[in-house]
Image 1 (cartoon, rainbow, N blue to C red):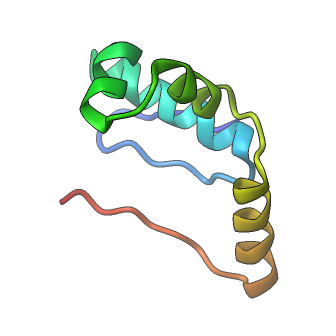
Image 2 (tube, rainbow, N blue to C red; image 1 turned 120 degrees about the vertical axis):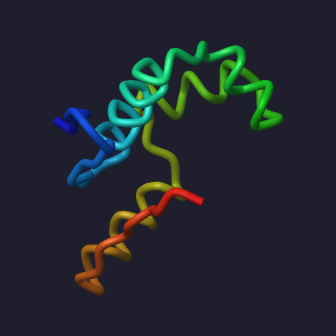
Length: 79
């Protein structure tokens, strides 16, 4: 399972569930509620909950399959 370490958050994410858990931990670490983050993103809180719960969607299944097939890593830098 993905975990947030001290310092800059990072994780080796291999599934929608791991991504969701990592994002939830990062949000909690930042002290932001689901409702506040959803409002900032312009999405419904229930949708954010589904993301953080790691519910696989067709999109995430294809995304992770694509990265595995191509042997690529995705890194997200801070803006």
